[in-house]
Image 1: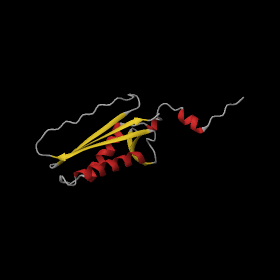
Image 2 (image 1 turned 180 degrees about the horizontal axis):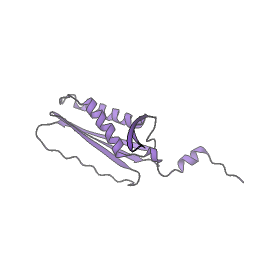
Image 3 (image 1 turned 90 degrees about the vertical axis):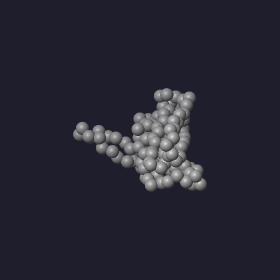
Image 4 (image 1 turned 45 degrees about the vertical axis):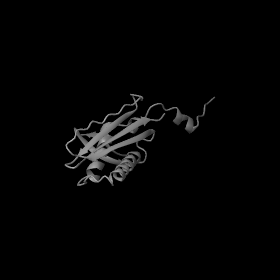
Amino acid sequence: MAMHYDENEIKLSIMEPKEDERFYPSKIQKIIKELFEDRLKGVEYDPNNANQLSERLVLELREKIKRGEILIFSKSQYQYNIFKLLIEGRVPRYKIGVQIVFGEIKGQGLRIASKCLWDVQNDNYASYTYTSEKVYCTGIVFGCYFE
């Protein structure tokens, strides 16, 4: 007697992400870097505008990751070619958390830390810090696999 499985039952039985749907910090870091260098070039710190700028960066970063603008590396004739994929849902089963710390540089030092309790095999994070003469911006993206 043949057993028939519902498509939803099969999806629910997947316990870890497919290889091309994993959260790779190096790929996410490139997205953060690209966004920050594009949006923050020439920006001066304005305390009246800092909150809106931070919120806009969070939303844009989350959208880029959810849309799947992730750099994929493929080996070809001893070279690595980079292809930008614009495919919906490249990290579809991940919950994405984004934290931005944006401030003015006035000679101070700063350390940013985070602590998480998660599945070390599937969950991960990526961070990037942009600095100019006038501002700094650190972006941290957390990817937690949703089973």
